[in-house]
Structures are given as structure tokens and as C-alpha cells.
Length: 144
Image (cartoon, rainbow, N blue to C red; front, side, top):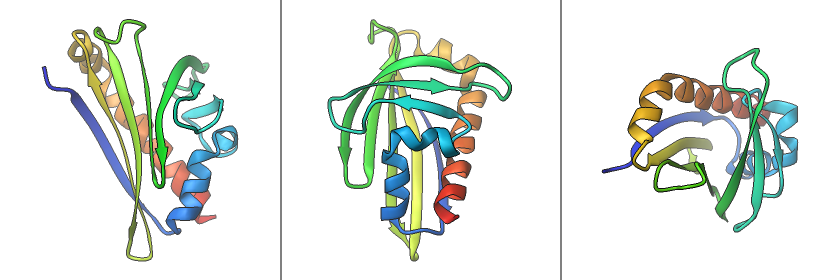
């Protein structure tokens, strides 16, 4: 089965370096990010981090262990899911591209595993809304 990809993007009127600093300062997420309200750990390839996310406004944050797969200039990737990744895995990407004096920020996740279709089918709209909330907050923080 092919992965299910949920993808968003936003243009940010700030240089890639400035956006990248915000994106990779995981401890700073609490200051600007209403979706990922706390991230414990560091943005380094191979690191184990804990992501605390608010799935819907007004809800208490939920915590999930995540493995940072790679951090390279203007691309960060982490992976989460069920302990048995053959059942459900989310491969989460953040990609920055210089564009017209600013940054094109692409934020997407590939979901795979035997339960991916059932899980994503129920939560697709909420996931996309949360990506857009994240994107808008990153834009606001970078442009401030």
C-alpha cells in the first residue's frame, strides 16, 4: 500500500535562515506554537524527542515520543507512530526553500502501515488544520 501524504505549504516573508532558527529551536516552540506547545529534546539526527501537541483548541496536550531521522540545512524529518511501525507510522517533514526573497515552507507527513488508512480517514481534516495552525504561527513568528 502506498503511503498517504497530507501536505501543506505557506509563503513566509523572512529569509530561510531566520525561519530555520525558529523551526530547529525545539525548546522555543512553547513561545510561538499553539499546536506543538512543547517539544523536549534537540533537533539533531538520531535524537529522541517528546512532542506535546494540542489536537484541537481547548484540549489538553497529548505527548508522543518521536525519533528525529534527519536534520540538514532547511530540511528536518521526524518519525512517530505506534510501537509496531508496520501498523502505523508517520514520517513528518519540514522543508524550507528560498523563494522571491522569502521562504516557501512545506509541511507534510507520509503515513503508512496496515492501519494508516483507517486512522487517517478519521483524522485527516484535524491533521491538516493543525499543520495550517503550525504554519501560520511559524509565519507570524518569523515575520515579527
